[in-house]
Image 1 (cartoon, rainbow, N blue to C red):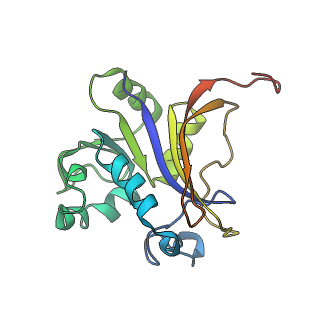
Image 2 (cartoon, rainbow, N blue to C red):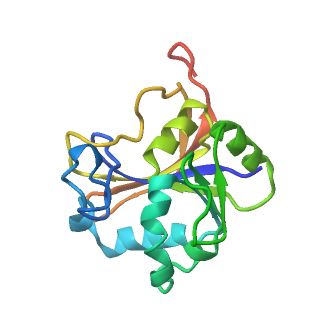
Amino acid sequence: MRKVIVVAHLSLDGVMQAPGGPQEDTSGGFTHGGWIAPYADPVLSAAIRRQMNMPFDLLLGRKTFEIWAPYWPQHADIWQGVNTATKYVASNTITSGEWQPAMFLSGDIAGQVIKLKERSGSDLHVYGSGNLLQTLIRHDLVDAYWLKIYPLTLGSGKRLFADGTLPSAFKVTDSQVTPKGVIIVDYERAGESAGGSL
């Protein structure tokens, strides 16, 4: 069974919006885009590269797909796997795109993701895709979180864990701290939490 793995950069207060650049996602008046740049170092780069080089398919929201589609085909030298991976795109507004291979999901996204997980194939990595993430979390479809937690707070912006998060327990499968204070930590499901007990 395939896993759904969320790959995210987070501030200490849980914001995941626009880590890569000022214009990446300004929705909601967000003005802090590009906030991960000061924390780049060889340790962080090596961890990111290791995850990028694993076999994967992508599960993306429409906005992330539209941001990535014109960019990654022009930068295959940086991340070739992103272009050859199948992109499963959750959207009720677009049904096709030039960046292939891609399949477009609409309607009951949770139900379709359950079917995708049951198929054989590479794990499904989720980058960005804030609205899709809330659907996945609300329906208990995330198997693992690969997080990079940065030593800053942003105060506003889209958060990874918003309303509708279910009680769940996770175990750490890998962790390290970079020289610039970024906590790189991988969590996998370890059960459910009910009434404060596991």
